[in-house]
Amino acid sequence: MTFEDTATRTGARADLTTPRLLLETERLARNAERMRARCAALGVVLRPHLKTAKSLDVAKVADAGSFGPITVSTVKEAAYFAQGGYRDILYAVALAPSKLRQIDAIQTQTGARILLVVDSVAAAQALVAAACGASSVLHVLIEVDCGEHRSGVAPEAEALLPIARALAGSAVQLAGVMTHAGHSYAAADPDVIADIAEDERHAAVTAATLLREAGFPCPIVSMGSTPTVLFARHLAGITEVRCGIYMMWDLAQLSRGMCEQDDLAVSVLATVIGHNRAAGSLVIDAGALALSKDLGANTFLPDARYGYVCDPVSLERLGDLSVDVVHQEHGTVHVRDPLWFARLPIGALVRILPNHACITCAAYDHYDLMDGGRPVGIWERINGW
Image (cartoon, rainbow, N blue to C red; front, side):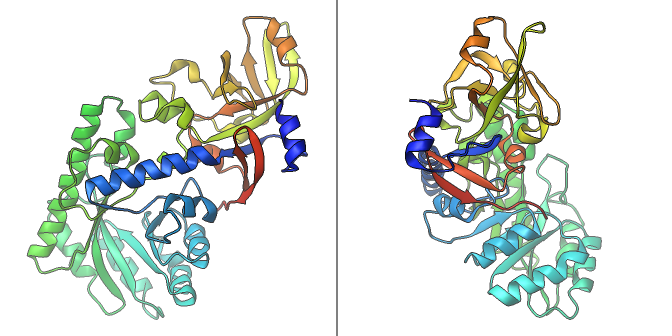
């Protein structure tokens, strides 16, 4: 049965306008359950990162409907999830002081606690100054650098305690520390990732210990990336973990051995719109905007290019086809066998497994839900800042 047949029979988004973002609900649920079980085994709270999902419906799958703690990366996400019933939200990006009024309004209007992040005395002082006149108390985590060197203070740095002192005040309260081993995504060896996880754990726990010994409260000790949570040997001293790509997965994670291909939950439905026989290529209507220009999978999976080309129903890869070139709205698929022109005529549908789900999903305002190869409904999602 074709994708068109199943869409027509179910009546779910049967107009088939492409490109569109498809979400396999069974895979999502399975991925979420595995991570919950992993966190339970490690003895830590899971604070799912929803920067990729950006959907209340996905969040409810991730936390089994518990409305527990979550992580976001934009103020718009914080407002959306707070309005949707979430009350413990970590905004895991250093806050521009100009956005503080929005955070205060979210907390005041919804009763949610939005945890904020700083990593320097200057940032702490700017936050405290901006908090003058706020209607709600601001709870803040100090970000610790565990080796990625993107942001964060060194866990044993002399600046750690001055940051904590700068956060003292009635309108601002220190709530703990957080760190993120983003460099774990560059590794594929489980032992290397486990070592990075230990560095991440040690950095967070070291900073928390120094703060507590100096008399500062540190109830939250937060770390996390999907790879380090999966491969950590233990997480002693950590109270919670933040990870998000495990819900969807993508070719970048597949290439590093984090998952299997049948775990990948999101794909892009596209239409064949051209045959360039002279160049030996098909053209699809999913290009850079629909897929992204991310080549993160290619380090360990060179044939990934900009995404695997798959059957629209089974999601099995079609031979060795990949999206080889992207322009803004065009995707080029090189074919060595001319029989592909007959197998994939103009108007044929294909699905693309993306390299980086976080970036790909950001182009769409909803998910088309798939279950057993059938479209079964839609879930709205948000975008923007």
